[in-house]
Image 1: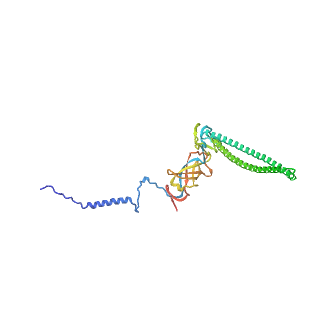
Image 2 (image 1 turned 30 degrees about the vertical axis):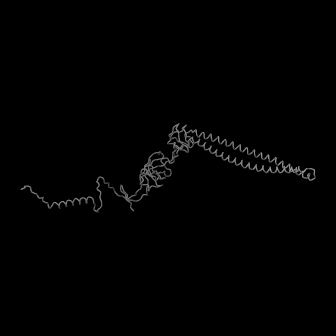
Image 3 (image 1 turned 45 degrees about the vertical axis):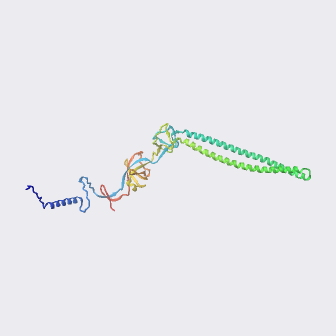
Length: 359
């Protein structure tokens, strides 16, 4: 007979109800910790992170801080209208210039040859036109001499015929002599008509040819003026008064046509350029104002241009000083901390970090 026997596990009749009670208490505690009295969600925050401030009634200013940089209000870029080699530099970067001041001189052999070639063509065309005009005058004189001789012969023969006709009737002159005179008169009369037609035709054609040559000469002269202007453009001059900046070229350097060689800034009038977060793109418009303080004095700026392109989450605006009042000591590149007004001030209930409209 085996000594092993099966031991029956006793069931605790109180264990299962106790586990249920503990589970219910855990769920209740969880619900109590996550739900407020109204059944909404709550967030537990440490006491040292809470900020309590007094709510007051006042005026809410709707503005954003904007940092802008000072730039010249107008800038003229200097480009090499014609390419060439830098021969002489007359000023340095940062120089104050007057309109017409010589900045740099370039050389371009090709342009110089073009000018000489155009001058030679113009001279040749003018000589050809003068030769043609001289030929026209000579032809006209030749036709006039022919007409003078023809008219003389017609007059002489007409008188001869008038004398021969009575003599032939009386038998004092031969009829053949009269007939020869009449035939010769007819020849000169026909020759006169042909000469007149030839004179008119030659005059018309030669005048048209002269007009064509004059038009061609005028075109060549225009080309010559352009070539000379291009040659003059090798001497770069200041187009207006201002300060020369971004000017960095060396003697012997070769510049291509249209290459940027510097710029002239307005030294007296400035604008402020600022980058603003794209979130405010629809709330920023022209004529909105911004203010800043410098040296204890407040100044007002006004948005003059909004660039709608967004780059790196920001868009750019240009602001000008209202009524031209700008600080005397500002410089290009200086940064200014401004307050850009987005809306009109409104009455509101204010706390340290929030504002609530009273409407």
